[in-house]
Length: 268
Image 1: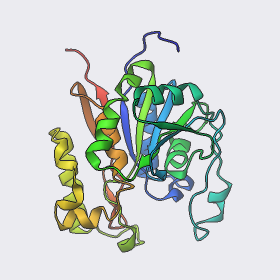
Image 2: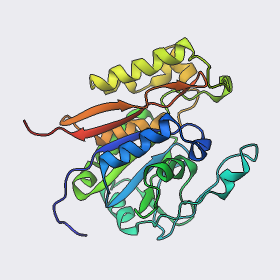
Image 3: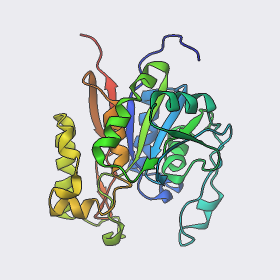
């Protein structure tokens, strides 16, 4: 592995919302492009997406991952034509496996890039020329386990790799209001603000056991898949990072598009 010194990479969380964002020009997609411009060009990207849920932990290790269209046929036909032919990085996959030892991490040859990854990256780095690797979510583990696992990935930042989570702080599809003028539910706003407050004050332990933290949390996080990627971003951050909240809005009443970027604080 190349051990040449590199500028410390930020860590990012993308509130990815609907895969149809890849077909649109809106506040969120423009924010993703702005985040990419601010980050620059990583050596490779390690993405923790809400849409690769497993028992055990796996990392994609193929040289050319497929673009996975992991959504229903009710969505617009042009979505199924979307491709994001970024290369993979067996080297990064091996590095992740080494960093997470002794946890057994399977080197996966079958998955690829799901829409939690490519629908964001196609707007952020549209040329698909940066290698991309995905790390799966072991859904048998609690929140604090995922956060702790992410702390083991921090060395990647000094090696030129971008760690990014892709999910949503508030993600309740069952009560969406399909209107561009729909107001956020009060519980969605309260929960989104609660999470941002805990992040800003670095009281991350207040983000564990989240479904035991009242009715707002239970409505905002009916399942853990879209919430857990946020904890990887926070776990890979450190006390020397400044955290900025971006694209901070709730759409369709119950879908938070809040993204964040944690960047190393410049020396005074």
